[in-house]
Amino acid sequence: MRMRRASWLASIPLLAAMAGTPLAAAELTVPPIPYHQRTLANGLEVLSIEDHASPTVAVQVWYHVGSKDDPRGRSGFAHLFEHLMFKSTAHMHAEQMDRLTEDVGGANNASTGDDVTNYFEVIPSNYLQTLLWAEAERLSNLNVDEKNFKSERAVVEEEYRQSVLANPYGKLFNAIDPHSFTVHPYKRPTIGSIADLEAASLENVIDFHRTFYRPDNATLIVAGDFDPKQLDAWVDLYFGWIPRPATPIPQVTVHEPARTADKRYTETSATAPLPALAMSWLIPPARDADTIPLQVAAALLSQGESSRLYQSLVYRAQVAQQAGAEVDARVGPGLFVAYAILASGHTPAEAEKLLRAEIGKLADEPIPAAELDKVKTQLLTSELKGRQTAQGKAFGLGQAALIEGDPARINSDLAALQRVSAADVQRVLKRYVTAAHSVTIDYLPQAKADGKHRGGAR
Image (cartoon, rainbow, N blue to C red; front, side, top):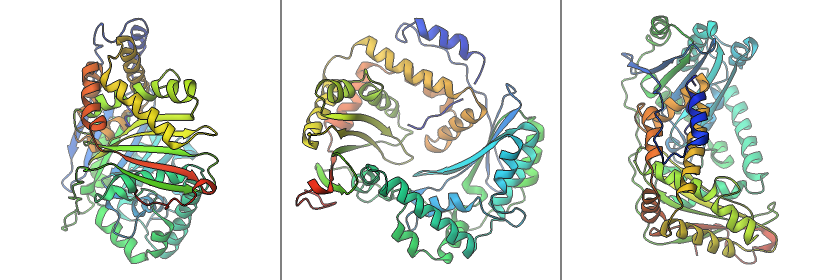
């Protein structure tokens, strides 16, 4: 899960207490992160966390649009807009966001996911007003023209070449979503495809921008060193005037059907030196209470070299050089994924047998209390470390509000994590994994494909 939370002085004694006390002995009381929430008349949601620990402030704008919202046959549009938003506006030059952040000792970046596209900066707090103006400016006055469109399309296409085509195992992980979903638009990879991007027109791009980049489809998050009254005044000044379109925002209403059978696919690679394997199972949306026990299950399987998959596949059997499991939680249905990159001389079938065996043992055999406590401590520590910066707090609040559906989850998730029991882990594994249907992808070097039908079900 992409849970990133964020800081406080209390974390120092808290972490010290964790070092000598098993989680099972007593639930730690984690001080809540106080946040303020309001919505402007034009629909813009504003979330803020006041924190004067350092003279910096994080500014983030999360647009409720991701790859699931890409037009049919135009995959990669949300990703393309991640890039276009750094181009010129009516009152800013292209790449001026870099000058407004990096030149004053700050930083900026953006990311695109299945459900959201977010833009984030951290700057000295005396530049907060400037950054709020800049974010409102590129929301309301972006130049979507042929020159910007073509230049950023070329950048996205090159990113696809590097991350998917040039990476020996890029095609494997890029194939998980298309094979795991049958009807839900999650089946379109976020990065898109060169063919779809080349088929796009400037008119397509303008329509997409007009449809999704609007105040009632955005959440502004500010965390750090600011005066709340001054923040409200600036937000009203720079964002409040932006009109709310009368047209409705398109919503994805497709429901992914339950799987009725196991499916298997073969993908081939001209660059992968060794075979690999990936398996997926459907899981509920991120807001579901079973998501956190599933995360604990994934961590038991793959967190560190003492984890079950590493010990079984990499250390003892030596059939894989890398093995892991993860929970990909989303606004809609998510995935529980297990994978292995094989060692020389071994096959996907060997890895699959061991992966299924380890998942089955975790679901059926007693889980030692010390092992469960260790993994929950690791997860909790990771979350608390994220709370040490304003940026981390802002990410945590965005994750809770937009992906999990409730900003209050930033404060309740850690308590829920500490309450996860061995029975919870085994219950969710049995329900969503061992008793459910899987999608398996065999990933073979081209020379070893030997008659396998690329991308086809068997």
